[in-house]
Image 1 (cartoon, helix red, strand yellow):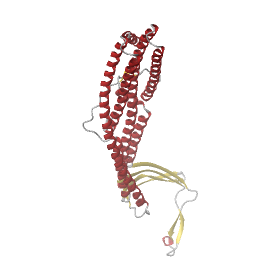
Image 2 (image 1 turned 45 degrees about the vertical axis):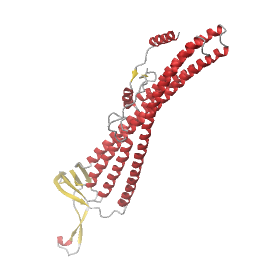
Image 3 (image 1 turned 180 degrees about the vertical axis):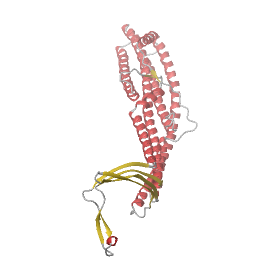
Image 4 (image 1 turned 60 degrees about the vertical axis):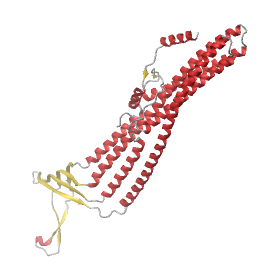
Length: 435
């Protein structure tokens, strides 16, 4: 009867449309392409790249055209020595001269020749770009970690539901046998009620597991950018452990802390070098027009051109730069302490995760052996019960031992997956490639 029930269940399952099975890597690729956090981190990185280009553009020569037109309602005054007109020495005479309209058409150019502060600003922007790249990797790792947890939860829930299906079939088979014996007045009615209660409890547990599985699949669909009604299934759960990486890499968190220190150091250099002189070249070429001149009201244009250089030396600007340098040095010291704290915490977490993985692997091995032994005991008890050599209590205890072995196996799987994910994160192996 048990074999017939399993065959009917397999035929019903084959008749229903099956959802496409997606591997963990396929789900990760879709999540990294559609998750909002990963996409926002990509935009942050592009913004940092644009800021680097902006800083580099400050070193490019600037050229601009200028067109200026002025109409004087009162011509400008100028003082000339009276001696120029034959007058006394030390006396000046005001003179108004010029034309009412002045026109200027010029092209101006400015070239930074020596600008250490701008060069250092480019370096600071590049360090900030590297920091944004590491932050992008951290965001992508968070997505991978959350999706992997959901994927493994789905696998565990599917395994739990499979165990519950098997237990439900066995309980229903036992219930039919006990109902036949009760009809022949060979067992008590309380025995039948006990098995019915066990069957109902298993059905409730299966419904709960199915609801939890659907919730986890909804989360996977949302992260992968799939419609809520899209069919989705995960691969069967496996107890095999992931091989530890031969050359573990630094985590994104530790590299983020180290890059924060390098950024603070660059900012300190920028502040200190802002005290250095800067040299800029400039030039102008154009025409200046005066008018109207004569009865025909013409405008005369005269060329004008020059070039030169400007040297700017900051002599004293208060103590603003000094205070800013002190502030950045304190920030650097704080960033160093945070880096050391991250390194210590990750070392502790790595040792703990390694111990938890080893314990989970041993527990799974023991659970498999115990589950196989409990299953053999249950089959033997079934045969003995059919021959009247075992009571219903023995049968229920044997079935309960099987369920306890299944639960132990499920719990060990959960701990194993958690430890493997944590080790992958601490070894810098959550992402296959770095940005």
